[in-house]
Image (tube, rainbow, N blue to C red):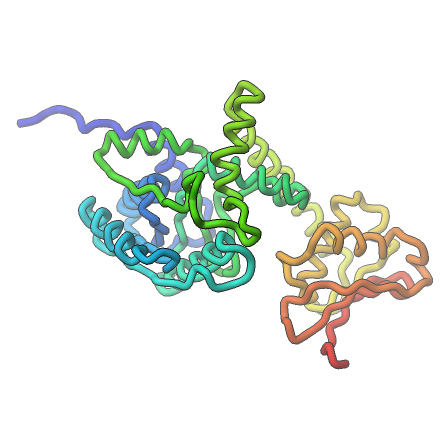
Length: 361
């Protein structure tokens, strides 16, 4: 009889397993399934293996979802190959969702991302599950740098949260258990387990897939040029410090958001979708709290969250602190979530109100 102890998993896999189990334990309600997005790359293959272990121990359903973006002539064949590899490693429920990754607003990265999340969210709703994605520490570092480049504040620079609502699907949760693990460690682990992966050609430095303006895809430029350049210039690996920065900012944002929610609940009047705020009560608050309250109020009134920019919040704040804030009448138009409506924030006699109306009115 073989009395040898089973081989211990690679530290990167162990860390990710513990993280996913801890994330599930923090949810108010356990999902009925884990829907793992699998592209066939090393990150998603590792994510699938981690999720399989945790799902088995938690006795919940596991679904591997391969999203074929239909961006290349051979994409259907590649999706079938990924499914075959997953089945070889014991995965029994593997689905392929075909989407039009080129349709939608923005460049190819944004369009494919939106189509991918939409397909995964549909599967999560169907199974009562949560989505598991294989974003790593390397992806987090890239996200932090993209946020810095956009100049959109700490919320953007904080990167991806371990638990968050899916983009475009606030009712669906996304879990990211690999954010604290480097990609090279996962590849080392997979190689030791005899698990193959495929490298997406769109991630290559000379990929023919380009941004809307013809330049390299943003993440490709960061991964292959910017981050290696920073490493060389600073003499360190910048990924770990960038990931720490994201974690610290997430903690700060959480505290500030809680403070702002408390102040909003204490001061907001009117209907939930038509909040009224007394300017004299908001103006003395710190600007970081005021702008969070204003963002919350605007979204409750019907503003589109992703379209509210620094410019909008600065001008909203100016309604509270600028000239004529008590007796004057000023307003600012905001991007409405409903394309059939217009949304306007108005300062009138010391009160900030939000008005929705038809463009033809």
